[in-house]
Amino acid sequence: METLTVNVTNFFRNTEVYDIVEKEVLPAIIKTKNTGLRSIRIWSAGCSIGVEAYSIAMLLHHILGDDFKKFNIKITGTDIDRESLLKAQKGVYSNTEMKDVRPAFLKKYFTKEGNNYIISDELRNIAQFKKQDLISGPKMNGFDAVFCRNVTIYFQKELQEKLYMDFYNALGKDGFFVMGKTETLIGPSKDLYKAYNSKERIYQK
Ligand SMILES: C[S@@+](CC[C@H](N)C(=O)[O-])C[C@H]1O[C@@H](n2cnc3c(N)ncnc32)[C@H](O)[C@@H]1O
Image (cartoon, rainbow, N blue to C red):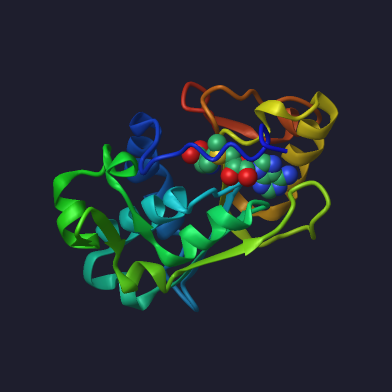
């Protein structure tokens, strides 16, 4: 259990992946939302203390600028570790998690209190965190992107294959699946996803 819930993480972990997410993935998603409810749904599966969800939230806010309020954005973080989820909900972080946050984002999206950095209410309001087991929990759907990074490394091959299929089914048309740099897409979903950027492990439905 301790191995599976190792929750080491930081904002913008593997910054090169976030470069593509910022320059290509999120703009592609936003482009498809030019009418109607303009809802954007993103799932951070195995979200640990929430920094992946908030990194995506910062990028969306940064890209959308004044249009941010016109969109109905929800970033859902799920994990099995209650302690981590509590920290995600609070949105209070220490120096160790902040190393890759660019100075402009530190200033814009956090308030500093003593040694702590507190995420802004505007970003906290679009994030929700819940306890959910990826293996036995309910199946989800309707997402524009699923991020599941550095979670499945200890899972058996059969389980990984099943999960990647679950993520495929959780995505809407043209949705993106972003996996960890140390993980490899295997199983039936491998033939279904299009490789969007194999180096950064980004796939598309
Ligand atoms: C190393 S962290 C990864 C955090 C973040 N995705 C990242 O890449 O920085 C792995 C997380 O996966 C969670 N996890 C492990 N097994 C899980 C499961 N079956 N269902 C949901 N979360 C799980 C752990 O609790 C832990 O918080």
